[in-house]
Image (cartoon, rainbow, N blue to C red; front, side):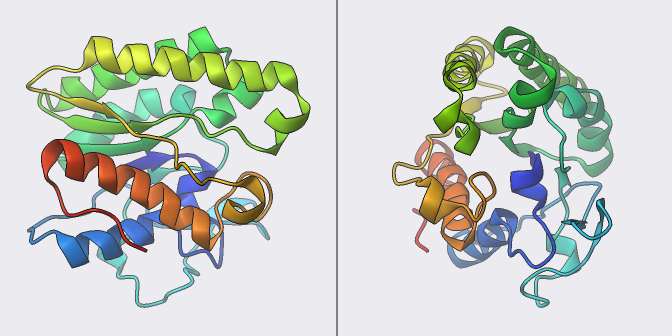
Length: 223
């Protein structure tokens, strides 16, 4: 189950990194596997709602579009939802990209880290052996002009790494993915935050490489 904010749900006309992950798993993982989640749509800028089915590739199958992501939603919003989502859809692996929206609008680094821990606890309440890959916050264009926000992103990522180290267990492992080494705001995003085609591959690669290296799921990511 892919869990995230606007970078994960995507917008009308996007492929999304979820699509890139689906392609990667089909190419490298013999399976069987299912992509699960309670939502399937994209954000539609014209309506402001998550009501778009206009993926860039219409051949992206409906059953592979499942996710738990929302425009403007963060750890604060997903922590109350994750237990029911994991239980209902029987998710055993979570790929999570959250935090930027929390720090930008809702919570400070310490409060956001608290919600990470709450999220993990609630996911485990549904499935004690669930595993997860967590992506650090990738600072956006705001961090370039706002030193305080940049510092908050750095501080949260430190706390996220600590939470992963504290909470990971053999029966319910947590992985901290690596921020893509070549992430570049001008080339990886189309607006300073949201991934373009290159960024989609980079985000999918961050999750794919973590799963391959730690759990031998799939192979190394190649665009």
